[in-house]
Amino acid sequence: MKTFSEKVHPRLNRVVRPICSLLAAATLNGAGCAATHAAGEATTPRAVRASEVVIESDAGVPRPPFDFDAEDAALLDEVQRAAFAFFWDGATPGTGLIRDRSGHDTVSVAGIGFGLSALPIGVERGWITRDEGGARARLILTTLLDEPTNRKAGLYYHFLNPDGTPRRIGTELVVSTIDSAILFSGAIVACEYFGGDVGALADRMLAEADWSFFVNDDAHDEYARGFISLGWRPTSDADPTGPGSLLPYSWIDSGDEHRLATVMGVIAPTESHRVDPALYYRLRREVGWHDPDGELVWFPYSGALFTALFSHCWIDYAHFGADDPAARGMAHRARVDWWENTRRTIHLHRDKAIANPLGLPTLGPDAWGLSACDGPDGYLVPGLFPEPVKMLDAQAGRDYPVFKAKDDWGDGVVPPYAAASAIAFEPELALRAMRHYRSLESPDGSPLVWRGLDAGGFGFVDSFRTGETPWHGDETVAIDQGPMLLLIENARTGLIWRLFGAHPAVDAGFRALGFR
Image 1 (cartoon, rainbow, N blue to C red):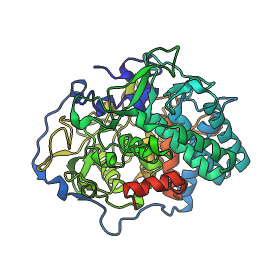
Image 2 (tube, helix red, strand yellow; image 1 turned 90 degrees about the vertical axis):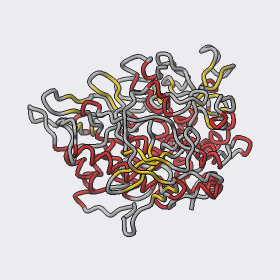
Image 3 (tube, rainbow, N blue to C red; image 1 turned 135 degrees about the vertical axis):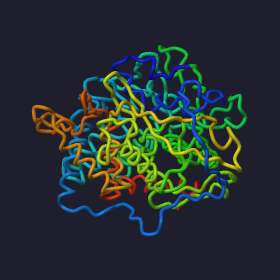
Image 4 (cartoon, rainbow, N blue to C red; image 1 turned 60 degrees about the vertical axis):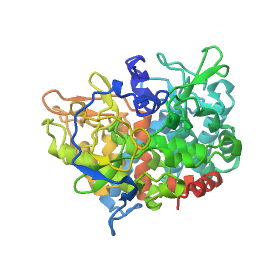
């Protein structure tokens, strides 16, 4: 079985990451997709009862928002300003829709979600006026809502043309649940910040979204039934809102995309469109180990760092504490503070980069965070994993996936957005990495990784590699710039968390989920 990203046009396959790079992270009619991965042998020297594991921070660990001195703030201003310019200056003329990446006119609805979330940051930082930001949000939402062919049951096609109509990329013409979740997250932020007609348009979009339509009840594996499918495909390109079928893959584990899509289904403002809050706690949680932090829940089908970051762009897990699956009927699940869990995942990535068992020249204490990105030969999804732990009270398949993961070093290609996005969890380490990336030079003395606004760039390049065969990507990608911009802002002010959490539907959904 091949993922979509293996099938699409090679120059555009990078844009399919949110829905497609993790197809093997979901289920195919309830059956695992281990055949698509290179399995690695791993020992399991530790054993735990998952129901007794509590992942939470030690007392005194600082939480965002953080205080930054003038020098740090100046660097963050520079990085954020350049990333914001991608969404503001690089948007499609006439519609405001966000290009998936520079150099192409393909629009990604996930990029639009990040772009809508970026607008309040631009206003608060003084880069645009409130009227300008409101007008852009209004234009984007109106363009989407006025085009009836770009959605099914209120959720949106992954890729669009610049005019808002659906767009096929290679073999993919798919309504994407995770990309729609990111779009709706951005709409919620814009709704709360701008209000008025922008708020009315955003609320209309949310009310139309029927998440219950995307629940997969036909999986062969009984446990896999009832989870949200990754998407829906029409029978005919000529009839994008007509007959079709759900993808046979579902969001079934506890990666960030799985949780974000499920949360959006829970908070749907139209009651008949919602999914049961219990579904969130049914998501599988595999426990691993990394010294010195101890246990962490990990996602065995992808060790890319972005799989631990995306939901934190909008959901303020930093202030929820450890959840309680047992109180929601799932006895064999670890209790997890997801902010702390991501912090431990960041430590794992950095520690392994320092250990650098392959001797890759790029990696080190200030160059770390393997994640989805461009590489010299195309799309890469490298990733690193913790030590597996035997879960004594858990059932294989039901409580954790049956798959042996193996570290994938991606030939030492590093995307700067990964470590930069870690600032909401480990600000000092993230700042050190950003300064290192900012200082790297090409043989001619020009910046290797940084492309400033004065040079027509949007900040950090997508990815790079140093050593005897140095390389760097030339394009800017919306779903990399977005989390970096939003998580820096949350680390500084918590703005996006506050706006997202203030929406009445989000507040009601959080209460239903037991988020404190």
